[in-house]
Length: 433
Image 1 (cartoon, rainbow, N blue to C red):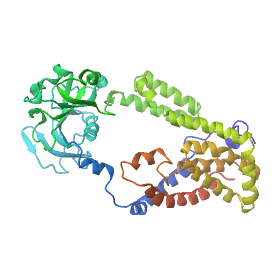
Image 2 (spheres, rainbow, N blue to C red):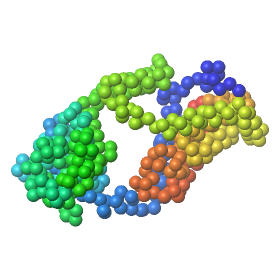
Image 3 (tube, rainbow, N blue to C red):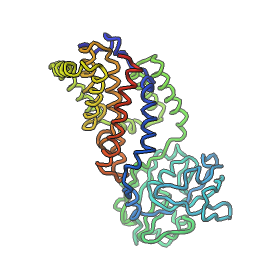
Image 4 (tube, one colour):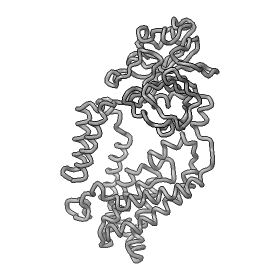
């Protein structure tokens, strides 16, 4: 059995958009299923985020619409500010006019000051919008280049702090702590008015834009009861957006044309992203999912061991001997089903690596083109909907969505059965036996 694509013309490299022949119908089927059937199968539960909102700290924050902001000319609804998770737009200050309550059809203009109350995580998302700048403290650094060394932290004001009894504007946070106040929370009380005019009290929690050493310097500072960092609060590099999009386009062109191999193209563009400072070397290292890489590497070893030990040949012979008389469609359905079961227990990458030699061996023993069997493995490994551990995105929504394990089985099992039947029909049409 020869698994080398260079020796087997039917195992030549897969084109970048080759999978779209079945991938696009897959997506359409999935969307239609979830829209008309899937959502009806999920119980109406209060999700995790809604539960946390009841006890979450509500900050008050003022954000000004700067020149060039992408929100200018959009209505509140179109700008996505109407149904923010955990955040509510209280009022808009336009010149001397206070607009409250804010209607969804209200158009945003340059210079508007938007007052929000809500959770810190959503405030961080708004702070990342280019041209939307907190104005509670004049020390806030708005320029994206200068933001690179800044981060967001939370600090609880102590009774002995020199800022107690002063407004935020008069407290001079930037000079005193190398920090600027972004938002304020006061336990048990919903704050009103302009954030910069709030007179600070002991126990107030401040959301601060700080220097990189704020936590280490002020962790034991008597001016604060508690100091902590905010995860994933680093600013977005807006000035590199155009260059990043250009490099992404270059990657797609290189991968689509086949001028260089996909691996080489990815390494070239990734290197250029680091060299041009679209991403720092530290962020590049942190973005590597070592657990997945180790799993894939181990799967390659296991797959090779199965092949060289003769297990692959024996299993392939068993399947061909028992189901081959029913035709290649049944064998294709069997390899798809086996891959689907395995991918629910391990990662999709590991499942694909493990099942690849079985797919090729079955096709060669049956005397047909192995490409449709390889495609079945690819689609089955990626269509994992029956458990939260089968795919990374399933696990990402498992907790925040308030789902249970049985919810995935209830919604995912019918979808996987539909996609299984669709794959057995569509794959041989695109890649004949």
